[in-house]
Length: 121
Image (cartoon, rainbow, N blue to C red; front, side, top):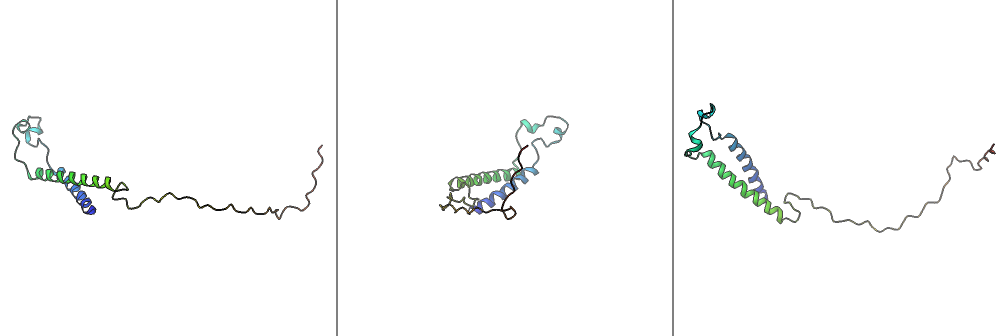
């Protein structure tokens, strides 16, 4: 169910962007191009176009799916339904006894009887 709502949300998002991009602005008539005052700015609006209806419908669907996904995210214990990896529980180090120290060894290159230091001058 979550995947279906997420896929619908993504599809509606893309369609909403495309529908808004292909619509014209408010002052699309020729008088707006030359700085004139358009009668449509303050007068009665024209008929609602199909693109405007599609924008309203897609906007409502977008808001409903966004709220649905947000509610599901708050009800999920991990915070997000998309998160499938749960953090590991706190791990404690195993209690082990300390290792026995190794016996001291002498380097093989050191002489057995070092020469005495010369007397100071």
